Length: 601
Image 1: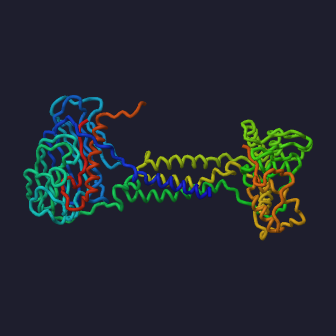
Image 2 (image 1 turned 45 degrees about the horizontal axis):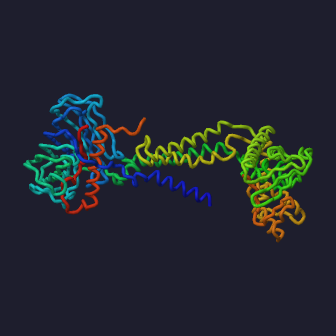
Image 3 (image 1 turned 120 degrees about the vertical axis):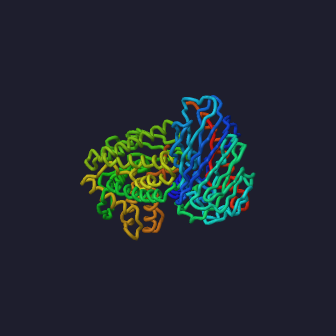
């Protein structure tokens, strides 16, 4: 049950790590548009090549008050009409008043928006008129001719339904500024059969001067309120050029990235990570010797030593098994006082402890029960808990010292590097799932696979090796474990002739975690329930077998607040458009590619 629960928890962790971007919104809440900069003139010159690449020149003239650093412009990489296409802009030049100006290219909202933050954060612009020129390219802007054919526009010239269509927000939908005058010129790679245009969201209002001439479309508009798009849909009589389509929509970009090659790399690295982890872990595993059935434990070894030489781990029930072993050897007496207390009382002279194994001596010394009349009360108290904890610690140390000191094991510290790598892989898997330094959540998978296939490096045995003498003892301990853990059909044991050995081997079965199998084997062979040892004095028939102890906050400058407000308004409008059935006969304004916006900061 614990294993199933562990795998379920792991599955939930991986599912959350991979798909949390699909659950949590990354867009900021929108606020009012209160940008103090007024754009007095916005000129746009678009040239679309035969391959569908857009070359754009935007000239933005603004009236700036004092105290502003510059402007920002952002582009939506997703296109609502072609959800499997990504239209990432490549900025080639930005000028301010005819001179180069510093700018930063950023990603926002889960890498959906490409942002150009233009200006110097350490200085502000002088009051007055300033002109920005932005040059950039965007691939794949021509859509199949039927794209947007059912949308209504405020103005139509000619027949826009053609082989291909340029369906674009020539003024992005979410500029925070008032725009007094807009002039747009779009040159397409073939003759324009017709054009549609709207100012605003939905059908909107008509553009001014929508003119089609050969391969060119021109239009203008005036007095745009903040966050008012101007949308053009123009038919062009050329074949729709091929463009890179991904098998998934943009909502999956944070999970899968934006490249099939990237997904292939993740799959390949995941397989490689699993193989590397498995092969590396295998270098720490000793080849097993043969395990012929043994009808008794290795001579002179107690239950903890027998399990340690077999598994290289101190058994979790080692303290209970040791106390039972001492009771079976008539060195201590175990008696249950009540449901919450057991007493361990020494009943043998100190000299009698000379023949017992060093691990058992360490436990007796820690609990102070060596000698007749010495007693320890195992109950729910701080003092008793401290003693039991010390007994467990001393038992583990004595076991390791015995194995090393007797030349049965040697240390191999270089094997511990696989544990370091395993822990590092878990850290990197978390970083990958949360995209800390990685482009998509799937990049957590290669590290997770390494972690899973090397997780057994935390088992006992890594960092130590058995010597030849240790391997011989391992063979004997493993053979004895076969006797304790397999049913009577595989390994017979004559309980009738050696009935006393059933109780003698109970401590070893407890250390190995096979007490139930050992009791079943007795029942199957003899035909009666396994006897309770005479050294186990329980006052409760329901108690069963067992013995236990017990920088200051975020500082958002004007750029960040203005950008988040604009993006929030834009994404809210896109969600609203999608939920209202953007693919039907609703208006075309704001519905094309070229989403995004801008403002000052």
